[in-house]
Length: 315
Image (tube, rainbow, N blue to C red; front, side):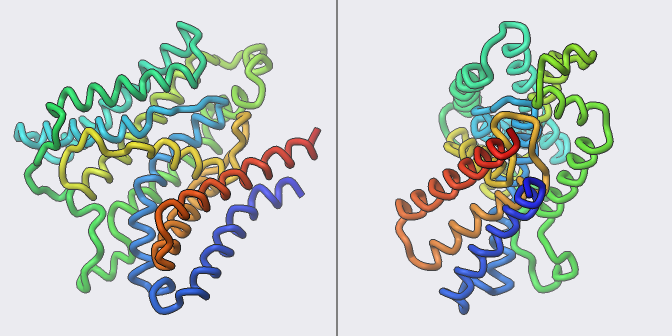
């Protein structure tokens, strides 16, 4: 029963909210154009959720990912303005995020700071770095193919089915899923999140695993920043405010346990889709923003309550 709830619970929730809004607004919600729009809206949070899945499965948390997204957009815009090729600029943004993750990992493993405190401190520090690099204003960047990653497909691009940014998210999801299932690092992440002391006694390099997890987590947040830059077409040091909560919520709604040791890539992507469907459907219903926020909060409470129920049943 626990396995069934873990695997099918998020999918059942997604099917329910989609069917509900499709019934209430069939003419505007259940259309191919709107489905493509929802996939575009999911790409940024979904990509960030891939890295957060690794962090939460290891028993940690990362509150700095929204600031990493902003820092990534700023770095990309600066590099593009200096004549750096688009691919190198995108890699520069990812490198900036991964470096931030390395620093977070060192704070947690060497200074023994709690992940909540370390990432909360970096949430503010990285936002400040982004604002400082940008001179506290948006940076206009020259147009490149990066701007087209999250464009709605034109008629002659129908063969792609989904925009490039969405395909990027799906490919990255396959990579993270393979990492967790087939690699030693994936097994170490689950072991550390399940029982850190037992993992240490079994010879798992706990500190190194945690550092790698936060490097990967921030790296994926920076990749989400690449997609956010594509959507905005500018480097914005204020973007991504509150995105860390959306990303964490997507992972939790997808069935990951905040206690660590549990979670799936599939579930995290489904969780991100649920949040997008709720937001999009609420817009189609012309609900005010405060109603959408209440609904999203309620979904998170239900997801966490189900997680606690599963753990009580297994004890």
